[in-house]
Amino acid sequence: MTRDSMLFLGFIGIFVILNAILLVGGYLDMSWTSLGVITAAGLTVSLYSFLYRDNPLFKLAEHIFVGVAAAYIFGIYWYQSLYGEVVVRIFGIGDDPATMTQRLLLLVPSVLGLLILTRMSVKIGWLSRISFAFVVGVGAGFTIPRYISAFLLSQIEATIRPITMDVDGLNLLLILIGVVSVLVYFFFSVEHRGVVGGISKVGIWFLMISFGASFGYTIMARLSLLIGRIRFLLDDWLHVM
Amino acid sequence: MFLTRTLPTLLAFAFGAVAVLIYYIPHGVAQEIERELSLWLRILYAFAYFLGLYSILNLHWTRIQRRQGGWAYSGVAIASFLVMFLFVVYNDGAGPFAPQASAGGYQWMFTYIHVACSSTMFSMLAFYIASAAYRTFRARSSDAAILLVAAIILMVGRVPIGHAISDFFPEAVAWLMEVPNLAAKRGIILGVSLGAIATSLRIIFGIERSYLGGGDE
Image 1 (cartoon, rainbow over the protein chains, first blue to last red):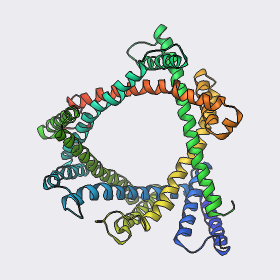
Image 2: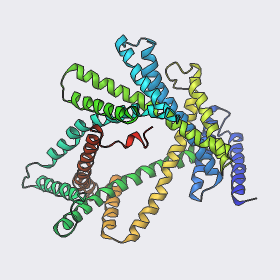
Image 3: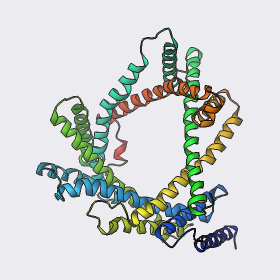
Image 4: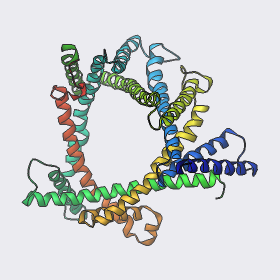
């Protein structure tokens, strides 16, 4: 018997015994909620086993997650988009206020959507290009004015402001220096040597502070999730807290 | 050639130009067109999801057929998909042609499998981030030091113990976020925006056609 098999069987054995004790002890009952807690606990411990090394328990939990997640997203897209925005409107289900023109217009994205699915065929897969052209074209068209308005102009406007002789003014000056130096760092058409190299070095410092802040936030977010999972295992499952 | 390459390029130009123009037309009809195009995009994203679904199921099915290494796990993935799919379609007894139910097997699997697994997966990154931080610290460069000092100040300043130690930490975090972090983010946003606009223009004018894929057929 391989080490992986022993680990797998050992875990199953301990898990069954532990849950039997919890059921007999009255900490868990024969309800769907308790079954859910047991399932979630098993999957959580299986996934954490990856911290030891890649093993069958982790792979099993990982593939269960992949399958469930794929079907979950199917549910989201079906009920919210395809059923909620297409089927309900085209067939006038319930008290949908859509007019006949709006209903007929919905046939266009429906046909385009079906054309996307032709990608699965080698013979007629080229038809999907029409749908992709629509998605990419409209996406590009939406991007240009929105990025100009929401990002370019508003960010430049907020950066170039009158500098006053106080702390706020000093901060504004620092922001201006930071923005310019970061932009110089990302400007690869000129070799980063001499003055340009010095400015881009300042840009790197600003970027490092920003990445450090994002890094710190990420650690905090992940740790709070970790605390949540450990709390679940100790409190909801094992009832030792 | 016309149907496979020219027509899609013309369509991308036409729809792209319309999407740009309607933003600058302050008229009800333009706003209506914008809403309709946004709706169409949402519907097409839903259809595009089916391509991804087909791809992942086909991948696992092929593994099973060819008895590749770990094919049994592919069977588990397909089986768990089918179980969840049945609950999605069953919709707590209402069927697929009714609003989504907020209870039943679908919600049970979402709560006890999907939520549990996703939060566990993300929480595992805490360990790898700690390992990455250690490796960064070992790099001993000034850039790495700046990154770590900023991260430590932020973490200490955002938790109650930071307030208890000194008022410096929360104040330093506020300054860090509002001045150097804002400056760097703004620089990145400006760069990304210019890139996105340039790429969008290339798509609309048919210079960028990689989304059509290779080949003429």
